[in-house]
Image (tube, rainbow, N blue to C red; front, side):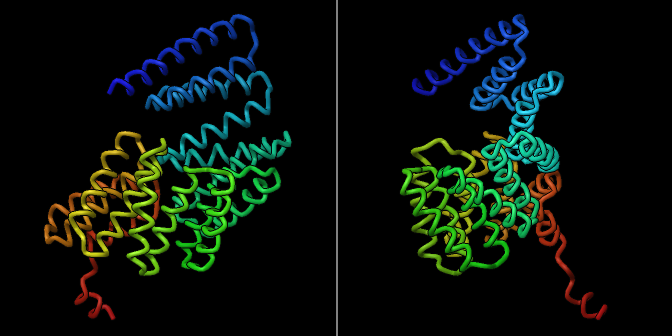
Length: 332
């Protein structure tokens, strides 16, 4: 607790210093420094969970960049707002900002930022169920990251490409990409990347029916994630492990992972993983025979997925309104 309070105290001090710097930049008329300080302030506020202030400051930074004709800063602001929007499940907003950012990055020739924007766009398309588009955008991003030798972005992008391949049912391609991602993450010592790849391998193993391997990889991923600060990835790993335990018939363990994912996703405002976790809780309750409570959890999950526009909404509607076999036979 003391350590947590120390970290919070340092963050508040950092915010105070950045606000002083913002006033100084505004008084001096140096708009580029003002944009830079707003971006830095937003990064600290994001760590503090002040999502509303983060968006407000980044939109202010974008307005300043646009008004001053600073196309490069404008592009970076658009990318950051796109990333923030993706992180909290505002996918339509994310698409709009990222597509504008890509145009600007290509105008200014900023290959690094173009690659980052493409990687974020890949995640957005995947969340919206546009799996083939996500894979293709991810491959384009990967080429840029390879060209610039940015190992961290190579790993995170390969992990997302693998997720798209899994959704497309190409398990061999997903396995190949994950093996390459693991080699890269170990070459560069990227522990968060190793955890992400293990998490995605867990999902691949589960889909291929290798539940023992899935459990082993999932536990290793979660143990790694407990030592680093990647809460959104941790929430996703909990959801995947919940599915593994549920398919193994270990419903108590499954429920524990799903409920932990609900708590974490609510705290960090990760709406996608919250929606998945609530659906998972409903699935376990249904297997336990508590159909009324299961339906209640599915309805909570449905509200989130409908708001985000994700394909899980249709799956949840089917669970809440199962087709009547007799009616289907009569219709035939």
